Each structure stands twice: as structure tokens, then as C-alpha cells.
Amino acid sequence: MVQAGPNIWKETPISIPNKTEVTVIEQQLEHQRYGNYSGILKVRLSGSNKEYYISKNNFVPGDYWNCDPLTAISYKPFFGKLKSKEPKPVNRDGEWEEIELSNEFFCFSKTYKDLLECYIYKNYKYGYGGIVHYIDPSNVLITY
Image (cartoon, rainbow, N blue to C red; front, side, top):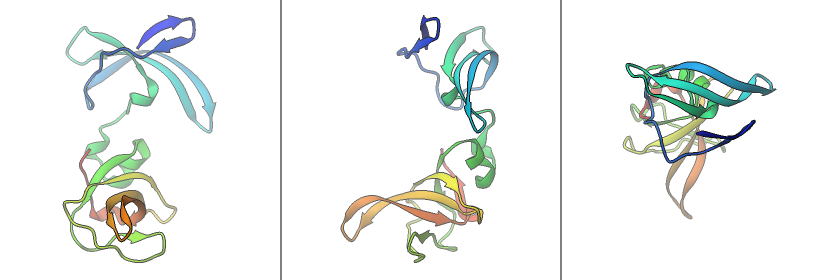
């Protein structure tokens, strides 16, 4: 990102690959509400002198991909796969769904019962699409 005014930042074509380890050396954050912040971070690539400005939305303070799924979802949404056929995911109607082990899905939240809420995309009776399913976190492998 590049500063385009006192409080204006614009995207640049430069990008840092996901999961790159950085050190935050400066922050310009505004409190939104309910513990949410927006703003810009100045970061230095680990093992380098290169510095960049990035959006706070593109920063994750931990290596969520090495955490258990319930901890990871508190950092950010992630992609995952089932570890085994059991326990089966449940759709919003409370029915079990058969999901191929190779089928990747997008987890975005957790329920009060500590199940993961995930979009599973596949061919359904009326076409291809993503439907919310509830998945036991012990059966989820984080892929990204």
C-alpha cells in the first residue's frame, strides 16, 4: 500500500506471499467497535531490511494453519478437508451429508456448540453451489 493523503491509502501491485513472517514496526489503527480495528501496519520482512505497508485486514498474528481448527477460526477463516468419513457434516436442516474426503470447504465461523460453520461446494440435486454445513472440528484438516 502507498499513502495517497493524510488518511488515505491505496493498493499497489506489490504483494507479499501469504504466511510470510513479518515484524510489525509501526501501526496506524482506528477502533471500529466491538474490539474490531481497521488501518495500516508497517511491517519488515523477517531476515530482511525490506519494509512494506499492509492493511490490518491482511495480517494474522499467529500461524493459524498450525493450530487446531477451533483456535484457527478465532484468527481467520480457512480452507479445510475432512480427515475421515465420520462424523459426517450436518446441513442446516439437520441432515447428514456425504462429502468426499478430497472435497475442500471454506470454514468461516464457529457455533455456540463449538462446531465449525463451513461452506461446502459440490454438485447438488439442482446444480453446483455452496451450502452451509456444521462440521465437528476434530474431523477437519486445515489446508490453507
